[in-house]
Length: 424
Image (cartoon, rainbow, N blue to C red; front, side, top):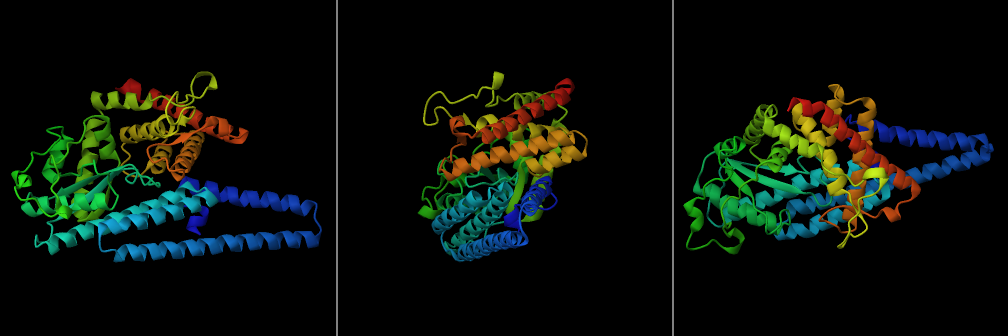
């Protein structure tokens, strides 16, 4: 039933979607009862019961297929074998979303699958290391920042990964190579992407801005490279960009697998750094940029559309809608000392702390759901690089709803500007 209603804990969207479902049923029943005979009313109820049973059967079948995938995941013996399972999982979620349209159901299942997939990939990297006689890895923690860090994993999550350890050792460098290669073979990270890795001391130095990149260890320059699965990472540990991305990385960070107490130290260090930075001019400069990001809805209600390329005539839902919304909520959350969680959690906390009015919180959450739906539909079409929508294909109802979403983001930006600019 959780997948059916797309609910999660006591989140605001839970009671909204459930209330709408109940209200819709009440409206239909009232209309039907007002002009129907007892026999017609009975027939109508029987039809609704059959439809509900069919939906519950669908949910049961979906649960069974997901359970089978999870079992297959636990039995996979090589990272490359995980790709087909991930593709099948994506097909199941796509079909469910096409039928239900529930953002929370899809992201909830996406978050869970992501963690299982990455944990299995990490275990396979450990096993490969043992099979090569390299011994077990030292204590480590793997964390993710990005969509999964905000609990907003969709079909094509945009994430970056950080591998932390307590002390430098040759075994850690060996494990880093194994894990980076396994994550690429499993399709978790792209071939050109790097895996940031370092000690807790490296992480704390990075947070202070004292050198974004750890010095490359000479042991990574081996004359005799490891087998293909354990190919060394070229260029050592990639540096983490300064500025906006580093701010996002610290705010949208969560634990995936490994030694959780170490991950807690990493996350707590990031939280402390954010607390220190939120009163500095550099943070307010980044905040200004975040709350001035352009939107797809321009002056006089005109859409800003792509002028050329593959998406000519379409609006950039990701870059000119979701990103401005998520960014504005993030900087407000940092400013108010809200730690962790995703955009929905942050809006709820900002509402409880009096920064959001109930009306604005409702509109922002409506906008989040609307824009996330557009993103997921774009992903279902195979557009992994971004999210686009063609305004010419909108029905009048869709056009009104999407415009209302962008207007809510604009009002969010205005509120953030009024709240923060005078304090920079």
